[in-house]
Picture 1 (cartoon, rainbow, N blue to C red):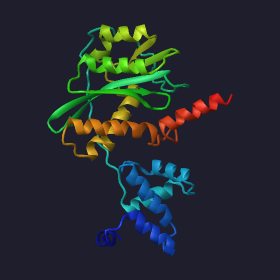
Picture 2 (picture 1 turned 60 degrees about the vertical axis):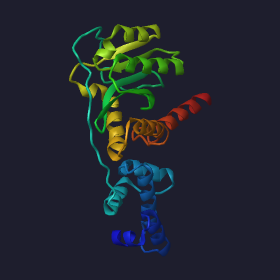
Picture 3 (picture 1 turned 120 degrees about the vertical axis):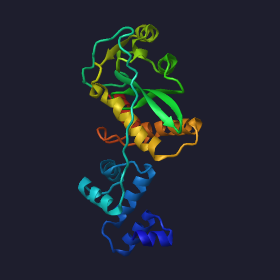
Picture 4 (picture 1 turned 45 degrees about the vertical axis):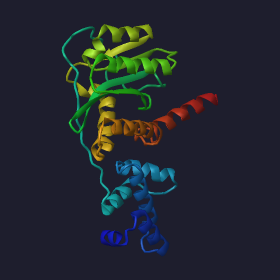
Length: 271
């Protein structure tokens, strides 16, 4: 079959569609949709997310069957991770670990997580600071810079505060990086009634949501594309964050972060 597709220059989804029409493969229609979903995700969806998308499309199929069909079709994702650590000892105020691995939040903007990661584009290094809402995993803000300086995190927080109405108490969770201990950063949080939470050095699982986002972003964007320069990556990152928030299915939510948030808002407005 792969040889036939190469010779005919035929897309997999087209091949499986015609197979379903001819009645030669009882899963041909499902395979066609699986191929489309996998391709549209940038070849990053595993069988669980593909299954959720198929069920949203009305297909009656379980995850075991999807996993088997994806193996037969040779659809595999590539995973790779790399991190950055900003810890330089106690250079300012170290906050208590208020979150204590309780990542569940009952509403948006109740608990936020933040971190910095290094991104290599050829020989150039970029640094990304991001904010994740623990309620739905939505990326609520990020900044990108050539330098991991204080302005990287301060500009991110100022933009976030300007664009969001923080009407109720909020907790911001981070590592003990020097940026988050800095008096200027701490003052911004205090002035906006944001409680600071820091996990202990070496406990990466205490900020699992940030680790997960950065790992996913690198696996699905950074390591699967060849970027000619930082500007090309910055444009692609903006598109990816929109996709991550609005389209990409999050397994624990069974839908995208924005869709999950909107469903909550609609549910509350009906009461």
